[in-house]
Length: 409
Image (cartoon, rainbow, N blue to C red; front, side, top):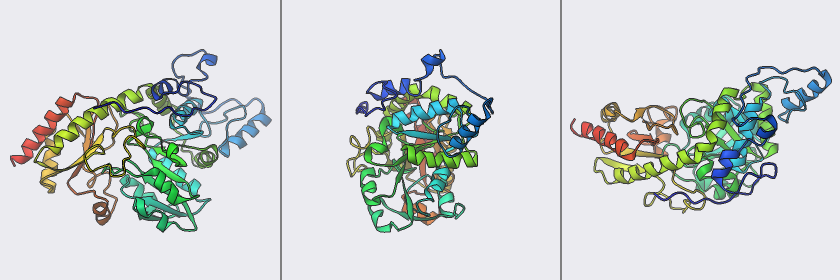
């Protein structure tokens, strides 16, 4: 598969580290290393910080609580941590954002973003399909908000006077459906649009370039890349991220510095990991399409699956996640297929070095009502495959073995 085309991004003046993504990823968030006299990202585990000047510390405390930068002492880790700050600055640079806020999980990042949006309105417009667990804070009433689920073409028709946020995920979890971000932004008008770009990462898609106000990632996935960190991050303008950091300071959701260290350390290899896994995913998608035991394959670069022509414009590549439906989609066949796998790991999550598989209807999207799942194209027999860094031939051999097992049943 061809490597994705790169488009130079406008870069913030404070970090002139190069015009191309691979260079930015290596140097992002490292602008203070020379002054510190270090080469590797430093890890600051302090839970509290000295405050010898009490008046200055009080001013810094007030600044941090409101989501602003520290004014001297960092005071307390719930409010600020320099290791976390470096990762945030690095991710913001890669997204073309002014600022970013990192949290202990993707759901914590989403929850804080929703709470911050309440100052604009308590109604949310959301486009399906979307990560299944997002249904809970949106539909449960737990946050005192209401949601209208819609399609990308109907966003404008369901906007209300009290709509405070529009949310889309593209590529969508788990069908890989693509949403035209610029068109949704147009329909949303003055209401901020939040884009979940977890599947794409800033390697393949930068939603702020399409007019989105905020971009969110489950950093657990590709940004972490090794299955050993739980985190979320949201990036955007100083003003919007300031409100989100205000919520974070009040609720205590700041990402632990160890997680921030792992994420920052992983940024230099992000493009390499995404592009390698994407190349394998493209091979597997084409092989699955040609197998009579597979009813349907969902992958953006396959014929007919990018009707708006977003690959090469909004996105620089189709990514490394695909999903497929077995020709026999009964529960027993689904379980037999997963149990027959020997190399591929049956597990939720995605973006790791190893290939992962899971049935969304039974796990990540089980909180979504069945009618809503099916309306969003999430069939009961759908399997989501997050392709890792293994050789494509070995992953294909494992898929073939599982298909042979269920065919012989």
